[in-house]
Length: 628
Image (cartoon, rainbow, N blue to C red; front, side, top):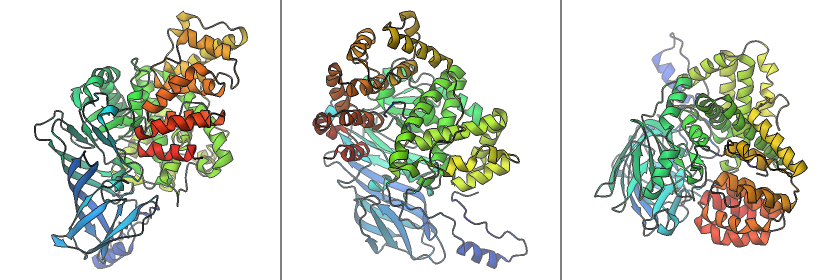
């Protein structure tokens, strides 16, 4: 998932806890008994599932997408494996109505436990040891937070409704009864019925054309955790970029998206050149309506992406590199629980920057690294005052929504931790290490302690763990003093132009700014003084049209100094932006700027109009931010 802020104010499929005794002198009976007693799966504080007793292995899912009533009617047929003493299998559910349950073709007893606002409820089904299949007939309810049902007016085409899901972190349970932890992986098949005239897509082998029936079949042969389950349906068409890559979008958006992502195949090849063969067959992107709450979501085979990256100049495609990188770091090797989230995102930011460097050069990737560092230092400073423990790479999210861990810490602190290791041991050795890491642990899960042990055993030599301050980076609060230095010559030139403007009022020369990318403009805007004369903001606006910009990154950055300094010409654009864009990365700092500059009533008035357009993930955050 692409979170990374660049705004100011802004082995087996399980994780083995113990090794089984492999002494050849041990009898088969003794070995079996010891294996039976040994827990293989970690305790996940965000899931009710008990996979050491009974675990899902494959899903056959049939569903009818009911747009009129805004619900999914589904049957989840789970192939399972059990321990020898299993008496139940437990699923996570959130607001689902369970109509019936069968085990191996026979009606089975089940209970739905007490509801928790964050976790939902446990669905406990009575089984016997050796049970093979559990079938759950159900429907979703009003609390299906993963689902966003869009009316035609909320789409680009304005004629056909749209549905998309967002399952990360623990929202898959709101639309499928599942064992909803990142440590449990399974394969799946699906048959989904949608209204005629729509195309349905999943995180699976996808159709590329609409059919006349509205019934679509899917297959995912590689095992995935529940947070990577995904579904979308609407007026969607496809265009190939290469034999294994392509773009889905609404018809009026497709041409712009194809142009923006024309380097998609080159990105995949660059990634493979670094860390090994792409393991998911196809890599496609779907551009969703603007209410999608994130920059992107790394659903296997089909990245979900925000239209806010369609800048028209390829300047925001690092987001695509990020989601592509997740095909290795996250999707292939997955954090065992959300406390280890940095293992997904820190690796992905590092990999993203390496892909961008391979395609566009070191001077380009260092701009991205500089923006990352600026955003990290600012956010960490604020977090140290309010949630200091969340500035550790290894989190403790017990009793909290794992979404609370979605800050720049796992992304950018994680990136700089890995970059620090690269600079210590040398890039060549680090690349070999990472390539082997992804190969050795593919389709498995990883936790922080196990990774650090692997790191120390397979890469670091005597004394390097201490010189790198490994434990400080991972287990202590804040940003260590040995954070790597970032040198961006292109940003140094921007700094010179900005200093000249602030001192003399002279704008940068056109021949200079004509060469700037979005990143240079972001650096320029982000480094404007907190208190700046309205005349200077007006001068910049007249020269560069920031208020009228169609680039969402530029707009969101420009809102910071203008809102905080009461630059009134921007207010209409702020309202229009907040009503029509649902990306949480932009919403949070913009609403915060309004609140912190004494404009809370304005913020609440805008939010009242905008809230129906937001996904539940964004609504929950904004509800908390804007509460009276």
